Amino acid sequence: MIDGKKVLFSGMQATGNLTLGNYLGALKNWVNLSDEYECFYSVVDLHSITVRQDPSELRQRARKLLALYIAAGLDPKKNCIYYQSHVSGHAELAWILNCFTYMGELNRMTQFKDKAAKHADNINAGLFTYPVLMAADILLYQADVVPVGKDQLQHLEITRDIAQRFNAIYGEVFTVPEPFVGKAGAKIMSLQDPAKKMSKSDENANASIYLMDDPDTVIRKFKRAVTDSEAQVKYCEEQPGIRNLIDIYCSCTDKTPEETEKEFDGKGYGEFKLAVGEAVVSVLKPLQERFEDLVKDKAYIDGIIKENADKANYYATKTLRKVQKKVGFPERVR
Ligand code: ATP
Ligand code: LTN
Image 1 (cartoon, rainbow, N blue to C red):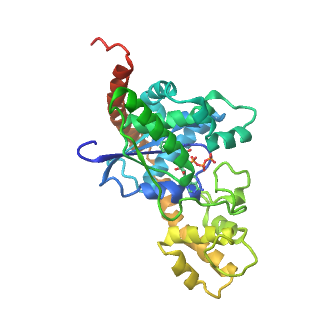
Image 2: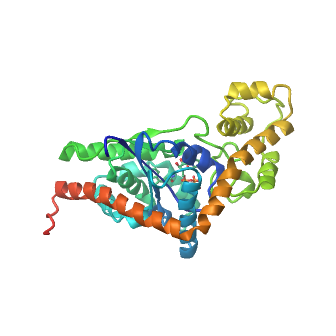
Image 3: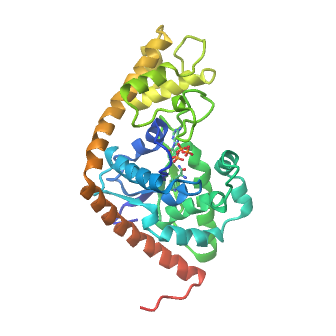
């Protein structure tokens, strides 16, 4: 608890260009939570280097991501928006938690298996212990809730296990966090292969809608989206492509799948795809405009970066000192 409010933590990697999946599954659900929770949103750049990055590109992307958090509607006065690399407590706590995490547990992580397969030439130890760093992110702020997309639930589960294991040995040190998955848009699938999630690292640019795609590109990608030959807008397992488009449509318009089925009853896929594209454009346009304005204001962004890093450091250090004491590190001499 901070000032009587529960704590919320989430983060996103600055790798690749953000997709509609990132927005609908994560970012969109982050907005409007700051009245209820004390919110921390990190640009998790330590996580990013588990995959080889070009340094200047990473720096630029991280800054853009931070601006995008604000453009998406997170007020930086009410939400602590910061770079993970500006708070050394993340790495320090991750080291300690590494010593409370089993190889067997990490071996079961599906994201590791996927990424190891994708980057077979660089299966580094950081990629393997990635979930421990994620646990450190969350536990460092004593977070009660963590809004994520469905694909991150396994990492939340291991975070809870680590916290409980630590608490069982040392007493109630960590808050055990709960995941929070939004209803619509929890898992947006690839437009080219509805069995795969939409991912910013997909090589096929037509598979993903990027948040900075212009309206024509958005519409074109939806027109090309892979569907089926059933010729009915129906929300069912047998039509994964159409179901994905309905999910996207609902998430952008706040309609339900039933309402959508009715709206497009007897209508063709062409018309439906166009409507989905237009719904997405109307969500992206204001976001893009705010983003363009923001990135021009360098001093404003710099101020936020500094202020919020100080705030994050304050809370992180509090937890870290407590943990260091518990495990038996000597107290600092003042
Ligand atoms: P990468 O392709 O580099 O692994 P990613 O696109 O999967 O990246 P992350 O940075 O891993 O994105 O995820 C950021 C947040 O967005 C997480 O909370 C994640 O659950 C959510 N997210 C990512 N992809 C989707 C998706 N297709 N649908 C819903 N949520 C998603
Ligand atoms: N692993 C997450 C990003 C992430 C995160 C976190 C999310 C790193 N640390 C802490 C929530 C809480 C991802 O790949 N999406």
